[in-house]
Image 1 (cartoon, rainbow, N blue to C red):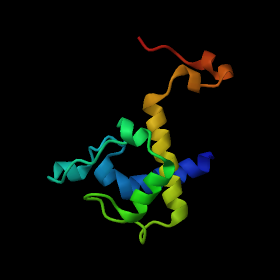
Image 2 (tube, rainbow, N blue to C red; image 1 turned 120 degrees about the vertical axis):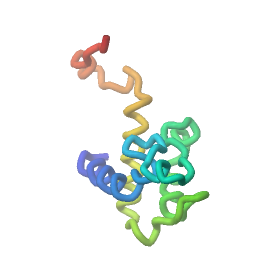
Image 3 (cartoon, one colour; image 1 turned 180 degrees about the vertical axis):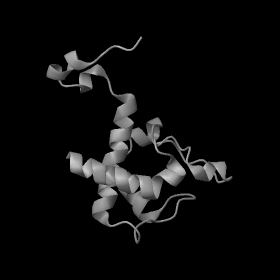
Length: 111
C-alpha cells in the first residue's frame, strides 16, 4: 500500500464510482438524485467485512443494478479502487488502536 496507489484509486473512484456511490462511499451519488436506486454504502458492515476479492469481482463483473467495469477499468486500477474503498472505510471506522503509538500524541480531541 502506497500513497501513489491510494491517489490512483481515489482518482479512478471519483471517475467511475462516485456518480453512484458518492464521494464518501455513502451511496449518495448524483444518480440517486436522478431517481436511480441507492447503492449500498461502503460503510455498511457487510461491505466492511467483505473480502477484497469480492469488491474486485463486483467492479469487474457488476452486481445487481451495477454494470461491469471489467472492460472499462484495467485490473491494476480496479485493485487501486479497492484499496481506496478500504481507506474510506477506515476513515470512518478506525479506532485509536489503529494509530501508531508514536503518532497518537499528535491527535487533537474534538469538543
